[in-house]
Length: 146
Ligand SMILES: NC(=O)c1ccc[n+]([C@@H]2O[C@H](COP(=O)([O-])OP(=O)(O)OC[C@H]3O[C@@H](n4cnc5c(N)ncnc54)[C@H](O)[C@@H]3O)[C@@H](O)[C@H]2O)c1
Image (tube, rainbow, N blue to C red; front, top):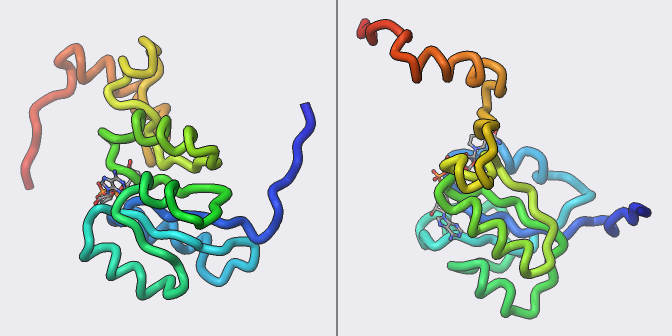
């Protein structure tokens, strides 16, 4: 298999403007290898707020609207709510775009096809793997409020 690098700048769409946007956007701001072409979120207030960061980008309420537009996009930053990850990513890939998904891929994990591997977490998987048996076995102690 050969790898063909995408042309630069990469034309991207930012999808989902929750709190993680503020971290994610740092990779794109003032990055000559990236051109932010489109902004997508059903929340009009959030779209308007983010449009201030990317004045030349086109804004859409749904990825389907972007797909139907004339705009060409190479890749998508998917910052969707966790519950939408599985179907959201399938839809995005279906449009032929590369997808950078902000984990986890499937929630609940059973949607990953019965994998025993829990979704990744921002603090690393290993602590979750170690904590799960204790939590499930009722061995986690009493919650403490300070
Ligand atoms: N990469 C990381 O380190 C990291 C850290 C924290 C969270 N995350 C992940 O990032 C994702 C986003 O986190 P968040 O806290 O910003 O989420 P959030 O749920 O607060 O915000 C999601 C945004 O997506 C929008 N949205 C909902 N349905 C949509 C649709 N169909 N199309 C487009 N946009 C839609 C919502 O209006 C909202 O603005 C989560 O899946 C989370 O797990 C990643």
